[in-house]
Length: 316
Image 1 (tube, rainbow, N blue to C red):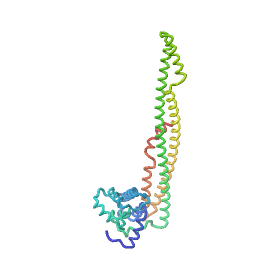
Image 2: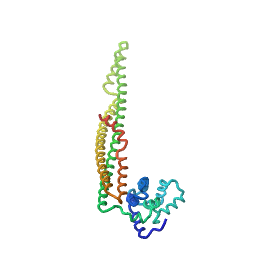
Image 3: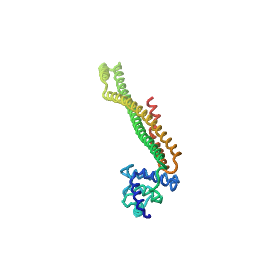
Image 4: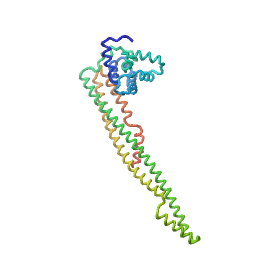
């Protein structure tokens, strides 16, 4: 790789200290109409950014990977490489030779772009555009935050629904056990009663049967008592689980509605801004749109959607 001018090296050093997202947005803005005219390359940058963020212990606050994590990154992006190949590539990528690889360093290496063009690239077309982009970012951040709230609420609703279903199954089993114990009790009573009323038997045997019947009716057998207690507790648990499931389901729907409204506002703002903004800043808006699209995929878990009908039936 050709030597970098001192002034450009300083600017590059500042750029590589930014977090992964900021580095990605800068690169998108710089080469929007160049190597990134191909949408596949734009999407690759988003994927590279997400992967580095995932590999970095600092997460979204990170800016560069150590040698070990960089090896993992290369394995996942460029396929299986030998140790020698990896070391060679890492040496080429690590522009500032600090044994760490920033996203920007990898992008320069991967797309073979001019460092000078990158570091001097304008990020917005003018001051007003910059303010508009910042305002749009605020709306996107709100939508993303609300998406997290909606997802947490949906997860809680799905968990409550599962607990309610489990309580229903436990109640069914408790009822079946109770019915079985009651039948055994009734059958025993019937047998004593039949014996006590059988005039073909002797008086002693009949009286003994009547006494045993009286004792049996006076005090329920222990298994039947336990079955009644278990079944009663199971019924109370079902009522409690149903109430929680209903409450969390309603809360999830409310949070989901709020999230949808937040997404609508953010997307409308970006649509207007995209029409108004020419030249620099396109990468910033594209990245925000991509973030919104990804967040919407996971805003409401499929599990909750799948269980909605079951939950409504159960609460009927």
